[in-house]
Structures are given as structure tokens and as C-alpha cells.
Length: 545
Image (tube, rainbow, N blue to C red; front, side):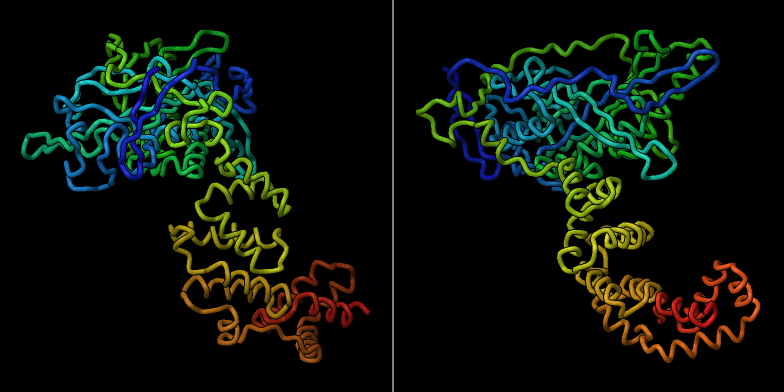
């Protein structure tokens, strides 16, 4: 019987995980084909033969945990240098790793969400290489037997000029493995020195390896965005790329159809989905142009210069680096259980039960999109936008709950007006001055025909400018209420008719499109306060009857 020590990610206390029984198979296994799902591809044609591009990804996501993977040191963004470093993180002799229970559970939950097989037995390995910010001279990872394998991720991306022209694709997830992060080197060119910050050393990472099933930058960016949403929904990682909580390495090659894959290059440490798409597309173009003139692609590591929009060489990979992988001697095999294999004499806090984690899985983004379409009758592309924009789904559903307006009418205001305004001002949903209650009140007043649609737009613009005012107050201050007195509207319509004899004649001769111009003139006169339906009825009665 083997044993693995667990320390709770929230409290840093240690527990002993007893290991018994034989390793079994994962909780579920999905059948999936190797790549030919492609509903759309990025094919580059030059000369007589087209080029096909191949893209695979390695994604490092920082696990959302209070403490590190093998020590109880605090995880804190932007902490003072070397202020969250334990003896283990600094690799002092005699220190031993204690695995963080929270991190194991997060990796299992992520694997389940990605339709992976969860290995009931996984192993830790030492990966040896020299970095100044890697004090031990090796990284603890899972090379031989990772915690989760053989998953699949479905994503959608835009293929046409219109935002609602979407293609659906799947990418195979080779594995999800636990590993520790390295420290950070701070280069001071002025002083000609490099300083080391070990705050990040030992922070728990999930490396998620995606097979080369993607063909261009937009596909890869869409897959990363979908993964980011899943991780944030699970709360297994904040996946904030701007804070380094999610970093992407892209492996890229090109080849002629029917031929073996070409020599690949690796573009390292991309911290933005937008930059990822640009880096991949540039690299595909670069490789294609080199091959077209008879050149050779080097197997190398490159970096993306976002200012120039190009990839630049970092180091040659022609000579394969020997990482000298070896089993981690201070960590026994990590044994997980399901309900069927759980020993009767073990308490819940002594083991990690895969089935219990599976029961806690929240509604995933793909399921949420389907539910929104079915529940509210909105278009699939609308549900895609709601889920992909942080906080927009909750905003929309709050407006629906606070009003009796048809959700199909609400969605237009939320996506076109609200989101359009926020994007123009570079604001987030949380920074919006238009609260769900304000928009719900505005749309209710519009539905009850207290104001016209044009007046509603004016009220919305006022809500965007000043926080704290209600639609009703703005309508009163600006005198935007509908003119509902028919006699008053008849007088206004008659004045328009008397002043535009030529247009009236055109309507009477069968050119009904001119009627819209007359309606617009009435609306202009009333400053949008007239009910367009009532105006049209009055004009038709006066002109056509």
C-alpha cells in the first residue's frame, strides 16, 4: 500500500491519502475521430499545389488555489519579490513536496469537463533543465502517466464576413497534466544584471495538450477562448491571460495535401487569444513563403513580437534536448477512486472521489448556449455572444426576469445597443452605467407604448451618460412621453399633408413607400413622441380614404 500526502489548497493543512487497490480505467471514454471533422479549413494556395497548415497547442493554466502545488506558500499576484517563497520553493536541502488536494481536484474537474478519461493512477516525474529561476534544476511534472487523457473540446469560430456565419469544430485533447511553475527572471539592462523572483516558483499549473487538429489562427484562438470559458466556469483557473494565468505555446507546420506533416516551429508564451491568431497566421505565411522559393523550415522555438506582428527566432531545436526524465522519488503514485472502487474503511477527506467531483460539475458553456436558445427562443449566434462576453448572460437574464417583455426583443437591446456602446467605450459589463433594472424599466415603458422606439433610444443614450437616473425621470425631464391624444396627432398630420402635396399625390397614385417619408416628418415634428402605428393609421385615413 502506497501513500500520498495531501495539503488543502485553502488552509495549507496536510492529510494522508492511503492508496489501495489496482489502478482502473477512467470514469468515461469518448470515441472520437482523429481530425476529419473540419467544416471549414484555412487552405493556402500558391502555384499549382495548395498548402495545408497544421496547428497544435500546449496551454498552461494556473490553478485557482490559495497555496502552491507542493507547499503551503501563498499564491498572490503582484506580491513583493520573493515574499511568498517557502524553503521547498527555494529548493533548500531536506525539504519534501506535499501535494495540494485542491489542485488535484481542479485537474480532475477540468479533465471531466473536457470529456477526458481520468486515470485512477497517475505518476510524477522530474524534468531536468537549467534555468536561473528554476533553483532545483528540475520541474516536477507528469510525463509518463498524466492525470487525464483522451479528451475532446468543441468550439465555434467565425468563417464569413458576417458575425453570425459560424463553423463548429472539435479538437482532441491529448492530456491534462499537473506540474509546477518556475520562477521569474527580471533583466535589468541598465545595471547589466538579472534578478530572480521566486514568488511564482511552485505555483500549480495544468498543462493541457491539444492535438494538431486546427488549421489557422482563428481556429486556435476560438479553441483557447472556449477553454478559457470552461476553466472560468469551473473556477479551476481564473485563466486571466493578461496576468499570466494562462499561456499558450503553438506548434505550426505546413504541407501539401496527402503528404506527411512538415517541420514544425513552436511559438512560445503567447498571452492573448488575439495575438495567438496573429502569430499563427504570420508563421503559416512565413513558412509557406520560404518553401515556395525552395527554402527549408528549421525546427526552432520562436517568439511573437506583437508590436511588429512577426515571429522571431529564440533557439534552435534541431538538436533534441535531453530532459533526463526520471520518476519523482519523493512522490508516490497518485491514486484516485470512484464510488465502485472506494475502500469501505476510508473517510471522504482521506481520498479524492472522481464521481463526487463529477456531480459538482456546473453547467458548461456549450450547455448554457443550448439552454438559452431553447428557453428564450433567441438565435444560436445570440447565445454565443451572451456566453462569451463576461457577465452578459447574467445581465440578459436579469432584464428578462425584471420585465414581461419578449426575450427576443430584449436580446437586440442587450447585444446591439448595450454591448455596442460598451465596446465603443472600451468598458466591461460590470462598468456599465445602464443597470439591468434600468433597461428592464425602459423596455417595459416601450412595450406599454408610453414612449416611442426613437424616444427609447434617446433615453438609453441618457442612461449611458449619467448614473443614478431612472428612465421615468429622464422621460419626464426631456418631455419624451408619447402623444397619445388622437385629436392632437390628427392636427399635426393634417399640417404635414397640407405642406407636402407632391408626396401626398405620389401616395394616392400607388407609391406607398412615400408614406414612410410622411410618417418620418410627423415624428420629426413631434421629436419622436408620436406612436408610429397611430400616425400611420391617421395618415392612411386622411390620404387614401
